[in-house]
Image (cartoon, one colour):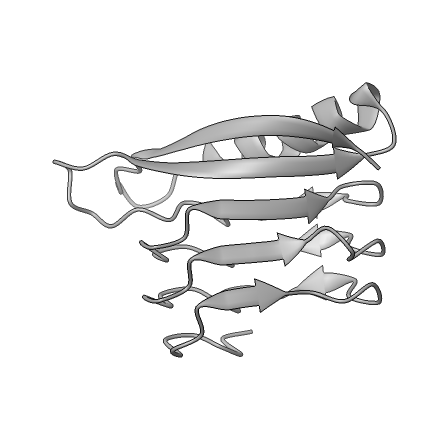
Length: 131
C-alpha cells in the first residue's frame, strides 16, 4: 500500500511474478504515463485506488488471464476538475475473448463503485490482444 505514491516515475513495467498491486500503490503519481503489465502473467489483484489520480496516465496493458479482483476506483485517473474528461487506453491481454470480457467487467465494476460523492470522468477505451 502507498508504495510509490507521489513519486516521479514515468513508466512502470511489471515482471511475470507480480501477483498483486496493493491499495493506493501508485495513486497520485503525477508523472506516470504508462503501465505495462503484459508480462505479469500471475497478476490476480489490482488494489483499491491503485492508479487513482494519475492524471498523465494514458495507456495501460494488463495481462488478465488470472485477474480476479479490481478494487474500486483503481483506474480512475482523473482529477476532480469537472471540466476535463480523460481517456485511458486499456489493452487487455487474454487467452480468450471470454477472459477479456470478464476482465472488462471487473474493471468497469470497480469504477462504478460509488464512494463519497466524487465525480469520476475517466473514459475507458478497451482493446483485446490475444496472449
